[in-house]
Length: 313
Ligand SMILES: C[S@@+](CC[C@H](N)C(=O)[O-])C[C@H]1O[C@@H](n2cnc3c(N)ncnc32)[C@H](O)[C@@H]1O
Image (cartoon, rainbow, N blue to C red; front, side, top):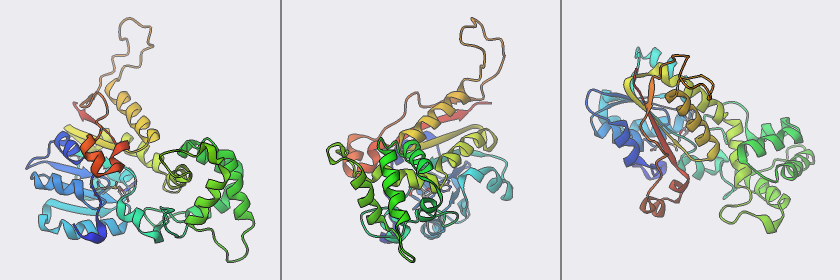
């Protein structure tokens, strides 16, 4: 893999095994990234259609996987539009689908993308380069709305004081002044009492996560993706998701539970009266987590949760 676009794929062996790639199967990768998962699926003989919002990911992975010829196709798109992407390619359904959520290492490591506070960069954080930047979001929303974003998407217990400090800094910017990533991290750290700073993460981590989720509408994309599964998967096809934070994992767990338990009768009804049939079966009963070995090599894997369902009718 090229050194400039390297991403260590998480739960790769587990996800690939559960997707059962084989010659003659067509699989959909909704988060191509550096192409690590896609490559393993291709290596097993499956054909892969992949999308990513980030044109740089599509270009780098396409170059890297070009040797698979027609077995591999990559399109710049949002996985929420999977159904349309497949329709445009004339494909009615796929035999398996994967999303490995979040950002890739090349996105995090490029200071000009603004995802990280480890080096100075603009407050951007857009994965696809379209829509509102974080700087624009901070200028647009009021303190109350910003606090809601930090609480809901970052689970930040100090959402209100952090939002107040950010809005104060934004309000005092002179013409042409900007807040960069390291400055924002300082503002956030300053708004949280030092004695309650989280032990394992930087005090600004939750705020950065919340702002990234907001500008990329990550939960909206995930909800649309989960809704699209019945219409993009062939019978026998599996859907695998790898989530990295509890909000996403909760949404996946609940939606998969809905797909695999069709009955809508009240719980106290002794016998099912609605007659609804399930069209999905669970493949993983509990979320699959990374081994200690993988976590030792790639600490990002610690929070990964893989869940898989199969379309049965
Ligand atoms: C964790 S990385 C995927 C890494 C990849 N599985 C690999 O092994 O190299 C997540 C990727 O998904 C992309 N992404 C995130 N949300 C997306 C969405 N809604 N639609 C399409 N791509 C998305 C990001 O741009 C990023 O490249």
